Image 1: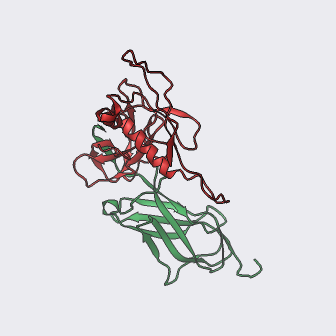
Image 2: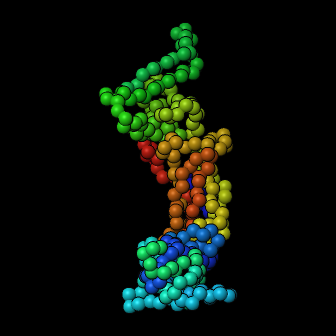
Image 3: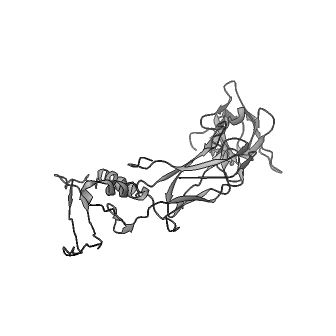
Amino acid sequence: MTASTSSISITKAVLGAQQIDHTYVVSINQTFNFSGVIVDSASGVQIANIQWSGLTWSATVSLYTLPQYNPPGTLTTTNSSIVIVDVTTGTITATNLAITQVGMYILKMVITSSNGEYSLQFTSNGILVKENSSMF
Amino acid sequence: MYICNYLVPSRVYRRQVSTAATTLRVEIRDNPVYNLSANSTNQTSQIQNILSTICNTYQSGELQTTWLASSATGNTAPVSLGVQEPLNQTTVALSVIDHIALVVPPELCREQSPCAIQPVIVAYDSNGAVIQKLGTINQPWQIVASIVGQSNVTVLNPIANYSNGQTQYTTFGFSNLGTYQVLFTFIAPNGVST
């Protein structure tokens, strides 16, 4: 007892990316991670296997420049700051980031595929950087 | 566990060959637990499995064939079956499956994501009526999708339950680009050989 389809054409993936594991508040120069996942652009469903068709991924992180009133701090990294691409969970994590001055900041991550076909970017939630004080 | 309550409400007349229908009502019960405690729950899994086998063999037609072939059942076979499941208050009449059809083919499929139009397969009885329920509530029949021919592509989330008169696919998709044909077939339900 079976039913079968006629030919179905599968078209190219249309991808997007979004943040996971949000960090909302850090202190000046306190390290934190920034992570994202690759999703199907239309449904928002996370891609099952980011290595399908042999793709590999890399990512860069920078501060997102606001139209006005940019806070004074900069994004810093150390020797232990790396981008981890976990192909099992499909997550991409930039580790050990830090911001140098008080303010509200937005980070931007750009994820690119090894064949240059996909360049996916997304911005973070607002990250509040506060004084390094035990009072807060 | 024991079977109780065998009822034959319609009378069988000895003087004529009767073709009157007989209703056989079977209740399957478990013994109560010896010690009730705050942690006592209704353990229905054994009964569920027995029930599942009865429903599956009836809905596939195997039960009727076995019944008819048995020397003990006097050349009879069940013509209908109603089931009241454990911890449930309603009795549901079960249909016998005759054929299935792909009513909605999957469409607008991109690699690595659910097809925008999910496939729908419907099962019908010999009168052409849609079958609402296959199997039990806990163990519904399941359909599995496979690619015809080559297999360098996989189907994402290929299995769906059959309930409410159709398969319930929500995240059916494909792993890679290309053009493929898909075959849908039932996973052999509990107790059924084909």
